[in-house]
Structure formats: structure tokens, C-alpha cells
Amino acid sequence: MNRRETEEKIFVFLMKVTTLMIVFIILLIIGTIIVKGYRAISFSMLFETPRGGYFLGKGGGILNAIAGSFYLAGGATAIAIIAGIPIVMLMNVFLKKTSKFSSFIRLCFDVLWGVPSIVYGAFGFILMVLLGLSASLLAGIIIISILILPIVVRSIDEISQTVPDGLIHASLSLGATKLETGMKVITRQILPGILTAILIAFGRAIGDAAAVLFTAGYSDSVPKSLFDTVATLPLAIFFQLSSPMPEVEDRAFAAALVLTFIVLCVSVCSRLLTNKYNKYKI
Image (cartoon, rainbow, N blue to C red; front, side, top):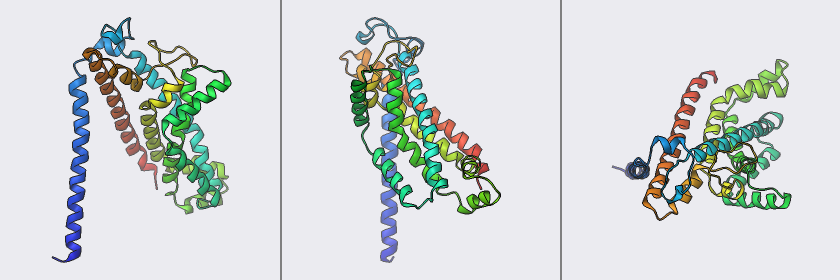
């Protein structure tokens, strides 16, 4: 056996070991959540809001946090997609993909992607103080949409760069405008990438705690307007884990189980939709 074959076997072995370690850690995390959370799962917990003394172990549930998480993550994802797709079209259709300006835009979003969410929350809090605004669902949606915008833009941009230039040139040569080419030709080709970006953005939005802690506040009721404070599952988990009472801690793991199940469902739906629309790609 020569040196190159030995190196290959060593690296294959290391890759297998690393993969097994990651799978084991994931299963350990999920198993811990299931074992500690299933005891507290009940109909009242899922479909009732907290009652008096809930954080002392009394009755009620986390309906406020479940609804609030969907409101906040759904609204933020919608805004990020609406704002992100035109930015991607600008970089890949109206400008050259390799132009300096496009590269500068990508660099800016790469930097924003790496900024911790608590920094976005602090920025939102300072902005709210300057404008005289209070914590609300609307403030949380705006800050979370800014947080996940770099994820949406860079995810869609990466798949957009795989679209053949010949397809764009063919569309333009047939008389289509750049806007028509971007919205009717490119968007159709990158639809699976858009769905993936929605998945990543929604998962990031629904799992964030730091940014919404500063901007969305917390409430024991389901918000009835954009200006009401709102609870989310990550904050519900955080506050319940801070309790010294075992019943409340079990509810925290149950809330974590619900959050994990939601993310799993979104992942499965996104995968199914991606496979469905992949047939439209050239």
C-alpha cells in the first residue's frame, strides 16, 4: 500500500468517525428533549394560554408562544423574501454576476450574516428608544426580517449563480426585458433554491431568542394586533428553564419538543416542494 492510499484511508476513517459523532450528538439532543418533555405534553398545554401561577406549576399552556412564534417568524420571512429577491435579481440580472458592485453587495451580506442576533436586538432596542416606540409584534418582525435578510439573499444568490448565462442571453435576445427575464425565467429556475431559503430563514427566525427579547417583549396572551407584545417558544423555554420547580422545567422541555417538531415539519414540507419543482430546472 502506497502513501496516497494510506492517506485516503485515514481521511475516510476520520470522516466516518466525525459523521457518527455528529449523528450521535443530534440523537442525544433529540432524545433528551423527548424523554424530559413528553411527560408535560397535553392538550391543555398546546391549546391554552398561561393561567395565573403558570410559572409556579399551575394550569395553562403555551398557545401564546406557539401562535406568537408563527406570527413573528412568518411575517419576518415574508418581508425578507419580498425584499431579498429583488436584491438577488439586481446582482445577477441587472448587473454582471462578477461585477465589483455585485461582489461588494455579497461581502456586505456575508458580514451581516455573521453578526450575532443580540446585536440586532440591541440595535432595534436603541432605535425603539429614539423613536419612542414600545416592544411589540411589529418591532420583532422588523428586526427578525433584518436578521434573516442576509440568509435569504446569500442562499438565493448562490443558486442564482448556477443558472447558465446562455439562458439569460436567450431570453433577452427574444425581446424580453431584464425584469421579465428575472421574474419569469430566472425565478422559475431557482424556485427550489427559494424554497430552501424560506426554510433556512423560517428556522432561523422561529428559533431566535436574543433579538425578540429586546424588541417583542413577552405576553401571556395571543397578540391581537401588530402593536401588542408577543411571546415566542424560545423565550418560553428560557423563562421556564429559569424556574426552580420541576413541573415548570418539564414544560420547558415540552416547549422545546414542540419547537423541534415544527422545524422538522417545515423541513419535510420544504424537501417535498423542492423535489416537486426541481423538474422545472434545465
